[in-house]
Length: 21
Image (spheres, rainbow, N blue to C red):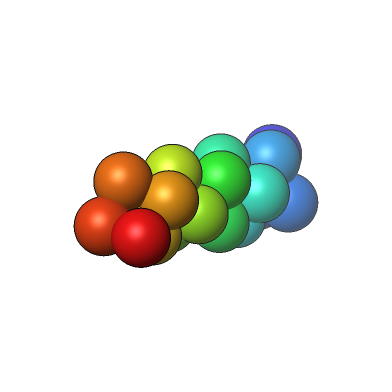
């Protein structure tokens, strides 16, 4: 469960970076 949440957070951050970039 914890691993899934961490992966989700990373994916969300990557999406935000992609939008900014």
